[in-house]
Image 1 (cartoon, rainbow, N blue to C red):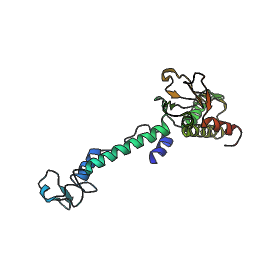
Image 2 (cartoon, rainbow, N blue to C red):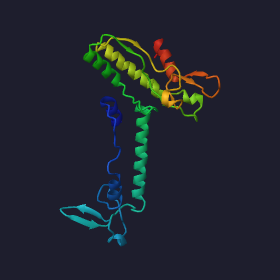
Image 3 (cartoon, one colour):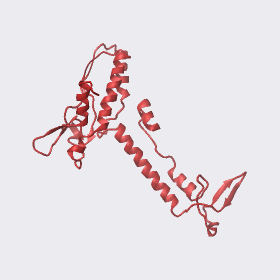
Image 4 (spheres, rainbow, N blue to C red):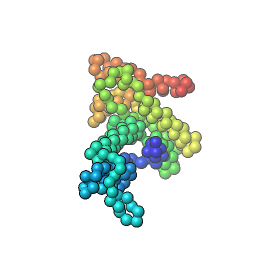
Length: 226
């Protein structure tokens, strides 16, 4: 979608999903002055404060031929809220991690590396941490919790831009460390977020490690199967 493209390319962080929602619902489904022109449709409602109008050199009051002003504006508002919630959900899943201070901007690693090299004439760079967090959802089974296409995409795209910085930007990256190998107790986040490519069972008393799909991706990456 357009928002996804703009977020990735231009790092747009603040979005408004709908502008003037009340106006669209009221004038589109009650007054009928905005598209789709629905509104009060009975003859008895001619004298209501809400009347359908059309502009042909002057405002012409008329009864709407379509619509139900008692239900449609509420349905429209309801659908707007659902669409807003869906857009927010997509944004959070694709570009924001469970840690509110972390955002996913994969091109950022390229921009930062090229900037550091150009600004400080740095001839050697070590990337000591690169990773993301996902919400620790206690309601998920381990088999479901270990499925994480977002983290796989995160590392795949970051490594692509890392290679671009090296090959095209001339940046000398000596080492790259992902964050992290396993889920951990992460500062103020505690156990609420999972950063690792290995799932840790914090409840079984043995802290059992289970490879997530991202760990499998890394294995295939190193064996040149990805």
